[in-house]
Amino acid sequence: MDRAAAMSAAAASERPAAGALPVAAVLTAMSMVVMDAGRAGFAAPALARALGVTAAQSLLVVTAYQAAVAVALLPSGAMGARFGHRRVFVVGVALFALGSAGAMLAPALAWLVVARCLQGLGAGAVMALGIALLRMVLAPERLSRAIGWNALTVAFSAAAAPGLAALMLDQAGWRWLFAANLPVSVAVMGLAAALPKGGKSAQPVDPISILLNGGAFSLVVIAAGAIRRDAGFSALAALVGVACLIALVCRERPKAAPMAPFDLFEDRRFGGAVLASILCFSGQTAGLVALPFLLQDSLGLAARRAGLYLTIWPLGVAAAAAVSGRLADHFSNRVVCAWGAALLAAGLAATALTAGANAGLLILALALSGAGFGLFQTPNNRNMLLAAPAARSGAAGAMQGLARLTGQSAGAVVVAAMLGQTARRCG
Image 1 (cartoon, rainbow, N blue to C red):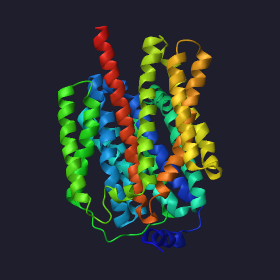
Image 2: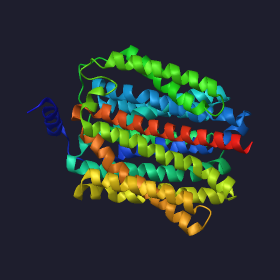
Image 3: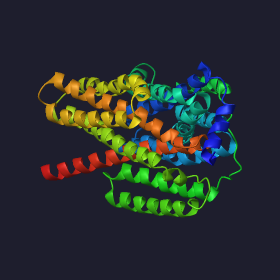
Image 4: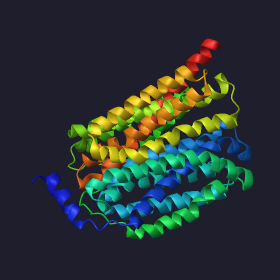
């Protein structure tokens, strides 16, 4: 028996009987961090007015969170392996709660940005270790269904976030956007007692690698966010970020279990799943970023009506995610992924071609796009996670989150560049 198989067998022998509480802990935490990100993004204009800052400055609330998530993913996976997955997961939830309390009490933008960084660090730990913990609880044949539950939870949370944010802003004020996280965080920490502790490795956590990781990913996210406002600063930040990434690769590559999981890329299934995830998240994000401009600027729809159209996409993701796990149990993961990617591409093309023609056709195109992505996501994540040994589940989960963030950043940058080019031509 090889080393990977031995580790998987050992993990399986230690797996407790699966119950509802461990799954509820992970899915509730995932819903909390996704919904918080969606609410804060929607509320950026209201935050600008309340804090007396410009719209561009208010976007720091979003960028700080994204950068902190990107920074936390890989170290969280490594620390989960070193100190125990449940312990690091709970610390992440506690950090998220602390950041939420700080954001709720923030008297000024700088305070709020720092609090959002704390929230992002906690959210990164939740994203990196959530699926790894489910893998410890559930038998392999049930994992794809659990990944489907996770995708369904994320999709519904993303769809509900704008509406909940609007209700909170209208009825209670912006501080309640963050206060709402506190009771949920307490509930998750209570449920987390049912999670397995996870094994502890002797591999030390390298603080220099953590610093290089922080410089690399925070600067890349900041560069992506600044590309439309200051191209020179964006290029410089990206250059320094890439230099940090190269230094990280050189430092981590010789290690047996590197924080940046280069060892996992030796399996072509893992590398292919990561690349496919980046590409499909790029396509989805490009579509979702461009849609508000298409609906409101090109088609002249009111914001409320445009918002209703935008909810169709995540609902399509949720509907497909509900069945994709079962499809992956009966068909090859590769086949289901290919179907999903093809439907996403067809939906994006149909959206571009039918947007101004007919409302019914636009609704079908948006639903098709969402369904394609939902169909792709679950089997692809299953490929990614099961290609890694159980002992490296935290690293695989961190890479899954990093692939998502990379794709989202790339898609947003592409659309920003296209909008900038269009504005120059019109000018």
